[in-house]
Length: 203
Image (cartoon, rainbow, N blue to C red; front, side):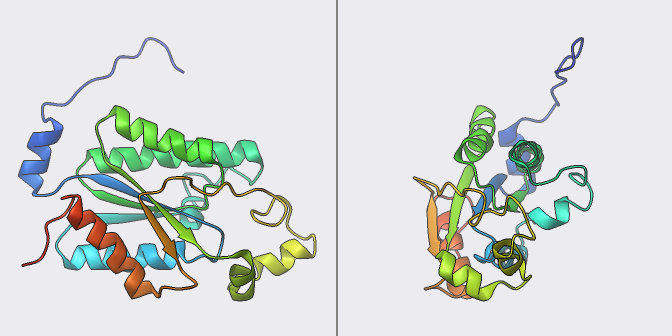
């Protein structure tokens, strides 16, 4: 970490920012295997929240690698750094009053715990959503053909095949996408947000 630096706080605190914006910032962290439905749910959730006049922004695992994280590969070390960076970015979005929706495989529990902890340290809500589907189901879906390539040895360190995925042990929301469609999955998340008073319930 750099030395000779000093954190410069702003003139607006969390409570005042939320009151002025009319919403509370938080991060909704979608984790799960490739092809489990994370990105599809994230897109639909972002659209739904925006239609509710809530400022939400989606941070997608693939999209981030076109810019911010384009220098990273898929080794364990690079995966750790990938999630460290997006943890910090999502925290900044949440601190700004936005609803940050992240869709990353984020296979290591310690990395997701780090994301949760830095939000907690800043008194920002963090909602972990386990987007769960059996390996047999995601392999059958395989929209990008990645599982087929991984099985053939063409892709190394592929989560679920040649690299581990550590499932969440206590997520706020657990979605079985082999049992629920996209609309029902979004409804489940929105219901939780309303119950926790993160967004207002409709009359």
